[in-house]
Length: 477
Image (cartoon, rainbow, N blue to C red; front, side):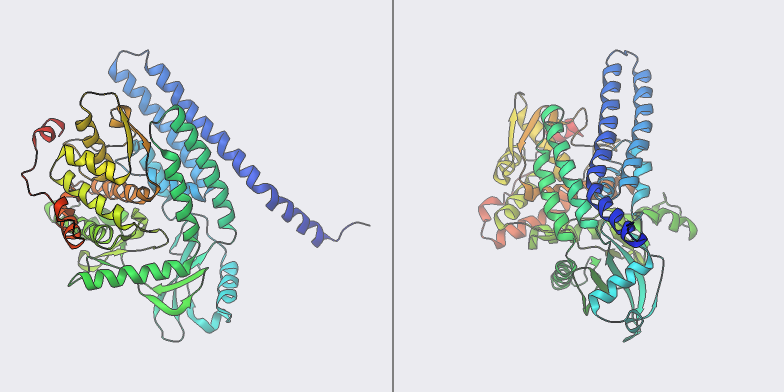
């Protein structure tokens, strides 16, 4: 006897869910191998070309092809690969062709239908949807890999709020993605990149698991908001206030902050008659960057608990160039000894102290290998590439994995997982610096904060008062 149509459809859905991870993995590997292989072929062909302009043109063409393929991978698979696009779509880390394509993926994840959103909210709050909200905008103001955000107004207080709702089923697919990415990282570090990438992906796995717990996110948001409030007369960044009693594992309601996404800042300036590359714009951008990096310096070095996802989609520019920092799904708490070791490194980098930099890297737990005579200089350059936002004059790309990188001379055999969030934060801040057309060293800005942290911890001996060593930096920069 034939099965009823409803049962047939249910069976199809179950089979589809069961085989979806396998299909997803197959799609990833086919595309990843295609992108990787095309670059290796281009690298081989470039080795036979003597004319530099012809070689550069070949690479530019390859970057255009690679950018389109990477865009297709990230946009069509979504999930974790949208996060990869956020990391790679930075002007200081990837070729410009990649940046132009990948930057468009910020907050462009497929959205969950409003009917499903209503079901999730009602199930989580055990209330009728219309009893909670006076109005609820159907179109989300932003949709990312894990959740989407809607603007709404609470019926109880007539307060405008942002409602963050988790995508059903997203967690399972993200775990599939991270396993594939870990396998690919192992391959790359074995055959191509002299860096412990697997540890970075393990830390990413932990952070992603945390992101699916909105109760944890709400606690983190309130902790950082309170810390910045008590640490400053006026907090350098605004943090949304959590609405009491309106937080569950899958739904988070917080105050709605009006602002312009930092990616749209230049366009907004042009609309208001301000030259985006003029002096007034430069002053505003400098203020924005100073406040943002000050907040990060205080979070990382004073408290050791920090927002670990400062990609452009999480930063709003509000009235009077105030900065709002959104999305606290990825936060990191550094162990005390690691926080103080990092404070030592910040001081060493700010003072251009090569021996102290080497000692601080060892204290942080970085294990390196080297066969070069100028090991101190290469270690110092590597530390700047990983842990500072400054760039040499005229340079806009300073990737740890570039052809001229110190990673080709200094191997990083062990990179502590706990440091990956710091590394990622610095790389994203550098991307903002380059995107704004500014030159900025977070290590130099953070030096007084690092010194204060060491003094408070009784590590006075680690704070060195000496004149900066500039000879190497003059050669390098």
